[in-house]
Image (cartoon, rainbow, N blue to C red; front, side, top):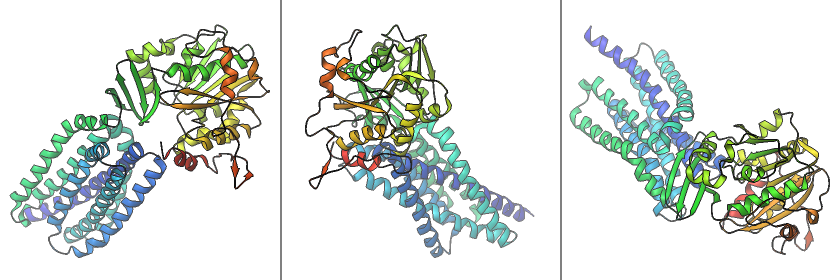
Length: 517
């Protein structure tokens, strides 16, 4: 009777174990994708590669599992030890390698770890099925239960990572935490199957040692990883957080405050006024008697700061996807000093939504639209640089209004800049091209769009500014030969392309353009 009860407990735990290790497997899978997206860039590419490698590894592991015919339980225990140790330290080591190794080593490490953990995960399920069949009622019932637990665990793991683990623990702690879960499964298996495991205390001690390392990593790995990550930034980090959407980093060196989103520089306090004055003031001058303004992006509050200099504006709407950026801009003393508390001003309404979806849903029209969004370096951001998006901007722009779009650098990413400009023009809007030297960024470009033609010589700056003057505006429309909109291929002229949702040509162009910078 006691033997039957033990087998029953063993059987039930195998079903539970299959679900638990499946949860851990899917968490590691998406974790590796998130690591690649953050450190290597191009989220779609990295998620595609990591998922493909992980699944390939699982296939390899499932094939290798056929060779494991003896000592199933002990084999499973050590597979969990390896998954716990390799997966647990994966994020921590990724940051260390990125900080101290040459370019390309971090990508090789990530892809190798993804393949290895995938292979180990692929071995788990066949072993559990075989063991379940040994102690289960029937082959069909045992296999079905284990498979159900595995597939259900995959869904749970994905949801946990997105809504709980990544927001609450971050990438480094999540890896250690999930590694500890794998290890716990192995230790419970040692206890449940202790009668058929020789030298069980040696195996338990090995698990305990790995557990100690993982616990040290869980409590101290994050701070060490931040010291590694500091190597990725020029200046000392004074604030770091992982929001639901991105990693937010603030650095400070003497008077220079810099804001980074997912590793990309967004502003420097030394010269951000150059960027934001060109973004806002020509646009306000181009619009006739502007009363309403829409800012897409710009959660740091700098563009709104410039807009608030105009008494004619009665309503300003800021649409920024990430509440964490706005929260930082309204609570951090450094950013508050820069944006002058603009995000707490009464004329402002803040909406945390995707800019594309907001324009699809709103019925409002605006005199001025400022598009201050991150560069189109992945599929989700590329959507905000398409003909479809700019058509929505056009549809919410008043007949006498004007819009300004940040459009990367016409020097470093010439083809990107003029493709954006041509995409805006393809919607029927009239365009004017501007660029300005921003020392922390380099030469940076903007595209003004309007329903009616605008004479840039008639634009003026009628509010206080640190950099921009009326006389300068027309000079910002002049481009040198190596940065102008002339496209010549094989001694023949050719038109710039149009970026669309169906044909996102901008992503590979952007990658090629910035590959050397």
